[in-house]
Length: 337
Image 1 (cartoon, rainbow, N blue to C red):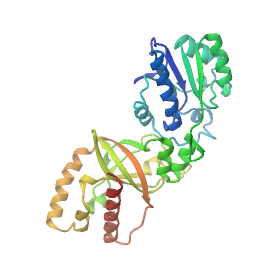
Image 2 (tube, rainbow, N blue to C red):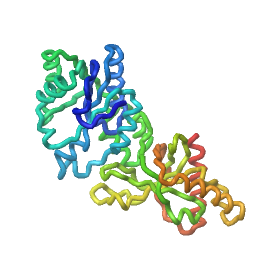
Image 3 (tube, rainbow, N blue to C red):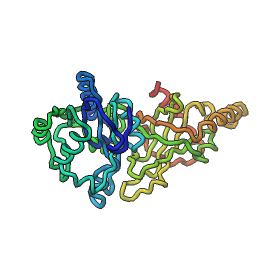
Image 4 (cartoon, rainbow, N blue to C red):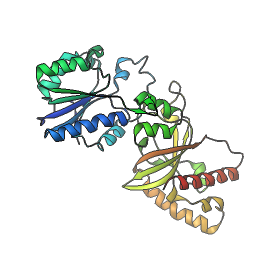
């Protein structure tokens, strides 16, 4: 997948099959559209193209209302990573500004889709609107396609469990901690990508070393406080893990720097080490595993959310906390293969 920041460096495309939209989450509905442009491009010996926007249009158009507390399923980096797996040929990321939003639908079609990109076919999702004041729709696009000689196709909505899949529906599920439901809508595991930093001192004192996972974009959606079963990709290797989230407050009051995401990888610790951490052999095992732990600090990790296991708890003692962590390890070990 070739990535272009704006239209200037795109160059000449071969029979481009184009779609456009924010594509936050790259969910099952988005994938249906992307699969379709790939199919058409193969048939006509062309190239598939997605035009998307950053920042999210609502953040620019409605900064004090609809966009103010809008949380996004994916950061920019995460969205690019997910899109790279869809097989599309070109991703065009347009910087969304108020000036860009004022381009009329006719000018967007004529100046960008036709004259600049030479669209062969345009595919859009059900009830998709575009251009200034969202004035463009399928009928308008189809009419202009007849005039400018490009094809137009509309993809129907995708339903799961009698609910129409949308980024809004997925955000709601994630904010409620319904990870498995959100994953079904996404058709992949919800992810957070970040570089591993120094973890919790209190967990380290329990021979349960963790990494701190930073959130780099203010608008990135973080699920509610609690303990999560996760799978973690680091340097092409997968690890089982437990992620603890703290201080993920409502969007209107939260501070990104105060949100703690502490990640423990299974290779750093065993249940026996936690239960018998005063034993000499366990302490030696801990030191050895901490050495491995240190080598991963600063590495980029993709955390795949599998399930929300429990709420964040207050423990009366260290022994109670160790017992709970041992139970968490066992549950995650049985859940993730």
